[in-house]
Amino acid sequence: MNPLLYFLIFLKASLFSTGGLGNLPSLHQDLLGNGWATETDFGKAVAVGQITPGPNGLWVIALGYITFGWLGALLALIAIVLPPFIVLLVAAGYQKIEHYPAVRGLLRGLSLAVVGSLLATSCALISAPGIDWRGWVVALVTVLVGLTNRVHVIFILVGAGAAGYIFFQ
Amino acid sequence: MIVKHRWLDEAEFVRLWALCTLAPGINQLSLAILIGRKLAGWRGIIATLSGLLVPSALITTFLTVIFTSIQEWPPFQAILRGVIPATAGLMFLVMINMSRPLIKEGQREGQTRLILTFIYILLVAFMIGFLKLPVIAVLVVASGLGGVLFTGSLPPSKEVKAAAASPEEQK
Image 1 (cartoon, rainbow over the protein chains, first blue to last red):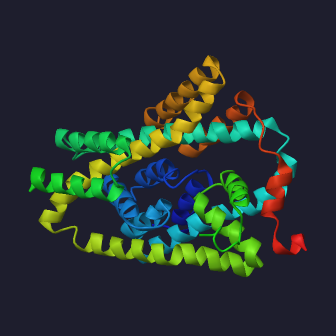
Image 2 (image 1 turned 90 degrees about the vertical axis):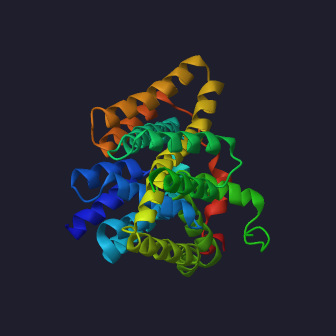
Image 3 (image 1 turned 30 degrees about the horizontal axis):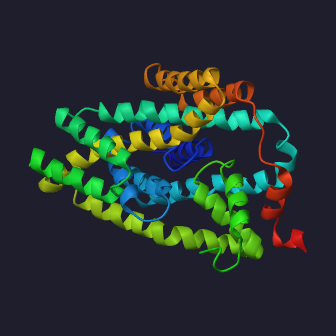
C-alpha cells in the first residue's frame, strides 16, 4: 500500500462529500478497486462509527485502522479534519457568492448526487458475497425499524448482532 | 450548551450552521472551527476541534482495536454476519434522510422539479452502481449540472457575514 495514495483517496472522498457518510461511495470504489479493502471492512467500520459517540463521520477512522493499522487511522483522521476548514473560505467569500443563483443549484446538485451514490453503494453492500436471504431480512428489518425513528441506532445494531448469533451460530 | 454560555445566541448559531452546510466534509467539524475562531481565533479552533475530536476519535479507535482483535472468534463472526447487513440498511436510511429535504424542496417548486429530483438520484445511482463510473467525476458533473438546473438564492449575506466574523474583524 502506498501511504500517500491511500491518504489522497481519503482526502478526495471527504473533499467531495456532505454529511458523515457522504464520502463512503468514493472510498468504497477506490479502496475496493485497489484491493485495499473488502465489503465487510466497510460494514465493520460503519458499525463502529455508529456505536461510538460524537460525529458519525468518524467511522472513517475505523476504516483506516481496519485496512491500514495505526497509520491508516491517523491518515484517515487527517483526511476528514482538513476539508471542513474550507468553511473559513466560505465565510470570507460568502458576500461574493451569495448573488449567484448557480451556487445554490450546485450544492443541490451535489447533495442529490451524494444521495444517488449512497443508494448505489448500499445496494452494493447488501449484494456482497456472503450475504444470503437471512442478511437481507436483517437489512430490511433495520430499514423498517429505522424509519419509525423510535429506536436508537445502537439498539438496532445490538438486535442485528443477536439475529446474527441466532442465525449463524 | 453554546447558547447557555452566551458564546453565541440562537440566531447566530443558525446562521453559522447555514455556512457549514456549504462546506465539504463533516458539518459538526466546520461548526467547531467557526465557533472556535469566533471565540479565540486560531487557538479557539484548536481548542474546539480537539474537544470534539479527541474523545470520540479515541473511543472509535479503541473500539476498532477490540473489534479487529476478536474478529476470528466464531461467535463474534456470527454476530458480525448479522451486523454487516444491518449497516447496509443503516446506510439506506441515511440516504432516505438526506433525500427528504431535497424531495420536499422539489415538491414545493412544482412537478417538473420534483420529477427532476428523482431522475437525478436514480441516474447517479445507475451511473455509479451499474456503469461503475468514477464517483468523484459523477459528483462533479452532477453539481455542475445542478448549477444550471436548480438555480435559487442563498440567505442574505449581511446576517451570515456578521455571525461568521472573527474577533479581530469585530473590533
